[in-house]
Image 1 (cartoon, one colour):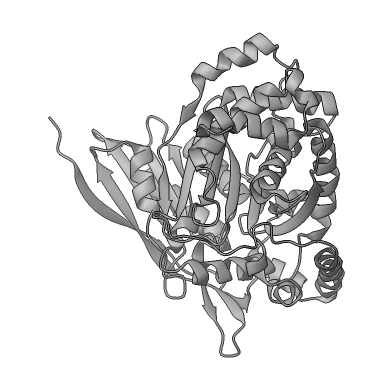
Image 2: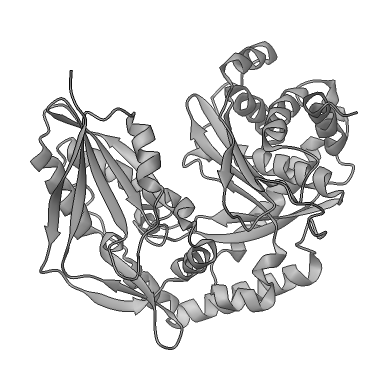
Length: 458
């Protein structure tokens, strides 16, 4: 019988080029979120785990960690406010990581990762990442990685996972033949003439958007205190994904557009408004260097969809067009946007974090019977209590085992009519209904019918 134990090992780096620069626009946006969520900002941390191939030693793993830290400035950067109040990033020329070593733990690697990520970073004083190596017996089996959201976004996490996996598999020069974009270079470009012009144009688009659209879907103050207030639930539903693939196929749109249309429909139902105004994160990765960038590039855009009495297929097409327009609103100085539209006016958000979402549809959409058979594979997780959140309605679509995994957070004080779990269950039922005669009903009415058996209302 083995006994669990925890030790540590050092990974040092030195002799590198240091730098101090303004924060990038994306970093500054996250910097504001970190301050707003503090002391509960650990929710923003970005994490992943990488399986370590057989035959690799602990020294091999520590060497890979050092190589990746040296290669990517974002993993050796601290963040702070300058004397004038502007955000700064400092790339450290030397430093060390204290790598946690877990030996024969009682918990699974996934459970360990959740706990490992549930702690804030002191980004103004220390390094922005944490690493742990999980051993089973004498073999290092898993590398756990947690990074401050100031340093990477969701797509950067995926690229970082790919790099660690490749280097651990023996490709010691992974990606080194390709040009590398750095956060400092990104900040310099944003503060140069082209960045100034881009920001001015984007802010003008936001100004026109704010003049045309009431971005607050739920204007009434919460009528009663409910504990817990902010609750999030996740569901993995292959049936939901397959049904929405069918809907995307018949409307000649992308799968993410169908999921965004679903959120627009639910917001319209819960708010009683004909038009839904929704923020969404935009990756802003268009060039090859941006696609490989290990840093934070994403910023939020926004779009509005007139749901009204339209059938869901029409809502889908409207959402596709609206979301495309939203891409032109994704690169800007956050402090200037706040002067145009105060951040607290936004209250609904939809994000699709599936890295291959656009190309994930099968070649041949499944039949009705095949899709309905997938419902047996639906898994709904337990409710997660959040200590604070700045949205009243927040959806994230992620990749799950065998299908999409939507996560829904509701402010239960502002939206007392339904619980997150009930709405998720209704989302799956609604998706299947859209393969039947109910697709001829107005989308809001069809979702209301899908929700009523779950909530016990008419």
